[in-house]
Length: 268
Ligand SMILES: Cc1cc2nc3c(=O)[nH]c(=O)nc-3n(C[C@H](O)[C@H](O)[C@H](O)COP(=O)(O)O)c2cc1C
Image (cartoon, rainbow, N blue to C red):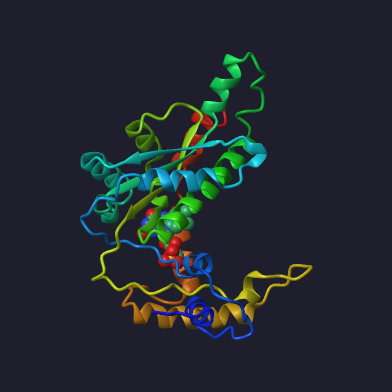
């Protein structure tokens, strides 16, 4: 278990970042220790845990304070089972005591504006959709940090979007509400040892003043990830880049999403 900032940074990058000589605090420790958890104990979260996560979520910044997001909290086993089936049968959804579906939501604001006889033009435009997605993502990530700070584990479930129409029907979502992703929350199963997944080196993502791609840093990351896949006994063939390509190809034919967005979100 790493206890210093230097240990946490080494784990995160698969190499030492000794020059970052700062004091470790609990916020940094939570952020730098993040790992997605896919195995949970059969144990409910304490009363109030959900509401504390939502308070953290609502504390995130929101574009123009429009607050264009909502969340559905699901604990019912049958509903979790149905949602799991709609998300490639991912068993973590049924295992986790709490499953949250984060929503981009312009429907609530539309109702409020109509009630007050205000002009709703523009609510169904692409820019508002992007704002709603960003708001939902920022809120969800704040909830993740709050959950992890309390010792719970989480994993996002983007695969819900594979069946966006059926997910919407299951959750009775009105027009103007889009399920962005799910989030499993629960106590991590301590028998499943999960490593911190290394990230691209900072040279790959951090550009100073102007954009400067660094191919060599990507090569080094491929090596770091190959070692990580082996250590974790993950069934990944080839490099990280090949893994990315495989994941992207699997989505390339996905047109249901576009039709759904045109019919239910971007069009009135
Ligand atoms: C928007 C989003 C959707 C994701 N969807 C899934 C998913 O459907 N199933 C899953 O097991 N993990 C999912 N993940 C988790 C990622 O696979 C994980 O964050 C990534 O591999 C990095 O690992 P780490 O979170 O342990 O650092 C998702 C993550 C994000 C941000």
